[in-house]
Length: 495
Image (cartoon, rainbow, N blue to C red; front, top):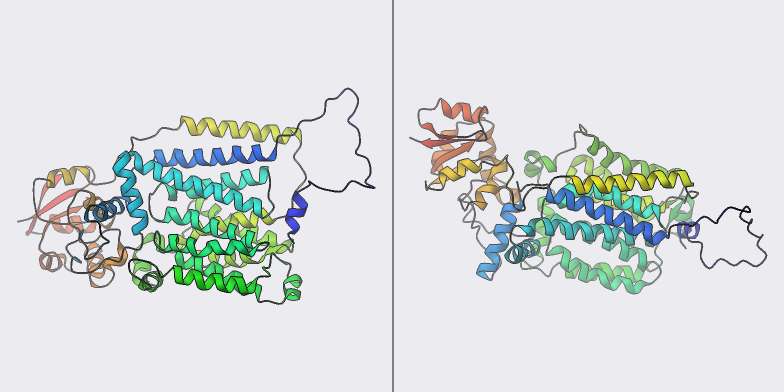
């Protein structure tokens, strides 16, 4: 059934009638091969080490502030979010918390471990992502060095995302786990019974559940295509269990409706994914600019793997079509590039096996891995819970003794929540879409007179970076004056 597995796996091969293996030259000891499992474990350990190094060297800066605050609020009140408790612009509006499960997990971890929870959260979920992806690659036929290479490269791609301590970290585990289940289910349909529970966990931890449902639908769609057409295009791994897949998709849809908000959460997530205003204003929803080497690799490697699968006429149906879809969509919104990397792991595992490396290549590779391990251990870390120096810490220290509403930059709104000060807007962009987000961006870009907006919301202080258009405008506005100045931000107070 799986050609790549037959190429790689060499156990249980009949030897009757086979030519005898050439004897080792006299006087030379037999070469001892490193077990494939050991190589894979080394790759997983190095990958987790990379995630841990990035997590422990990353200071807090964005969504983790309001994620922790939301989780702590729900634990303290023993209820799900109702009206928004963190802003003064949308306090009358219900906040649909589609990441409530991940937020409670972070808050509970924080209650037990304090600031160490931030790093542990990222390391555990990032590590589970790598372990699950390794199992997925093995299910597709990869072994030994290929699995190790896939895991290490994947760790490079996801480490920064995992270190952000967001609900998205959970989806880094759910997607490869779903792909693993579907791969196993092509031989045994009983595996499909795990999909509804998986979707139940997914929908209550992150809004990317829509992608999970699309994956199941794509597997079902390919199972309906005539086998002769699949073979003609070089397709691999078509599921023969159409009926079971249909039931699994139906069960997954039902499970995805079991949320504190009922089935409305799916509609909400779909609306957010297609919201043009959010895509226009938020960087991660925009197209990539390809100005960094890492961005080029994130898009270039999956594209090269797709081309290689087509060139060799070994196209895994689900991974190939899903990879192509994600590549096209990730060119529109770069927040999908992480999922593209996870699917690329399956493409890499499918390619034909190569001849074993020689002694010299293995030694160089081993030396490189040892050097990488030394670098990971030697890299400096920041104390757990450290707030990034880019945040206006000094400004909020000053304002701690001055009550009043604060208007601050979008990327500083999350820190405002951590300092228990209500926000105009913060990283929960979907909550503010509409009039509030429009007015905020108009003031930020000075496309409107700031004073009427700030007066309408009774703003007492503006915390803004110096040498920006709004800061320069307020510095010459007789209704505002600077009351505190740091290297990061200016604090303007209303006269």
